[in-house]
Length: 486
Image: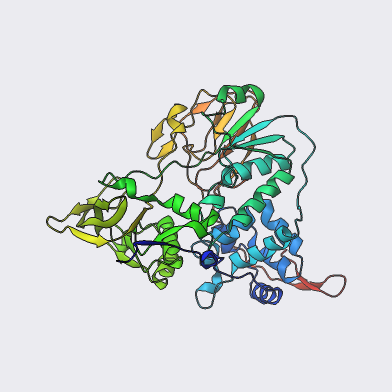
């Protein structure tokens, strides 16, 4: 009888999917850019990086200037160069995509960011001290970005992280195929060099007291991220592996991972695809993704779906798990039932309806679930009101703000930053509540994406007709032609 599971030692199978561009490849790709006026790619970027500008600087060999352009809009430029769904955002908006191949914006951004990160070049220095101290709770992308932006402006910042390493999902929850651990940790070190004090092993409600923080700091930013994966509510669930833990182990101890021969992954989002990729690349003979809706309702990006199909992963759509069979602690099979789609549920998608008598057994010796995450339990402890998955910010908690859970209108450009109230009442954009806090500092962020800049008044702006302009090349000292637009 075959052993139902085996230990893999092929961690190299999860190395970065795309190699870095060479200097020649980057120069050729940058030269293809049309440097569009009012560039669609910039409008499609959630952090509104001036993409034509940083690409132009690559084409002229000014890699430090290119990196600075990126970091001025997004301090986590190295992470986003690797994990942003560029096919759906900047590259998807590229004007060359309709009839040609879009510019490889993500890889060019990675090229510029790797140049400074590999050489440990710091692009910013802290401003003169302002005197107002800030505590940042949570060392994920929101907390790091907020801490870095504040440190640049001269505010002393202490960041509290409950894990051993900061970085959040960048460090622990994104498959190494897209972002290795060392890339995420390099960004944490960059934030440290800006003067941010990072204290690991500190969890609010455990060994970190909110009242004590309120007494020590002028403002508090909370970016605690999401909570645990919800339960399926089926028999035998204790033998199912959490998808985020599966990814974390593949990043920190891939050689010790136990991979099943026949792996079932429950879910059809991007995290589920990462789990299926790990299982397949680390030695599973068959990997089946089990999803209770159809291909049309998948929450994964289309390019991720295409990728996982090429990896040889199977799909079982319109299938809902009902029981996991295990014997002596070993998984034997996953019992499922076929479903049909009925009317829309609270999520706006068709609700699965079990088909009577359609139960069947799916052979599996390892089952992983990746079905989303719950809101953090900390929210209820703070007394926040929950409505339609978001949380109202009308607290009676002076001088603090939740960076990733506040109820706000979703924007295409998400920002976080520092706002001076000036004695007037302050109201969150899109929130139902306002609060008057006097002349205090408030830190704020949008929930759509968590990267650092302030949302300007009147955002998003109305699109204006693009005036017809003629680009006249003229000579700079040294004979180089340049465009008067930039």
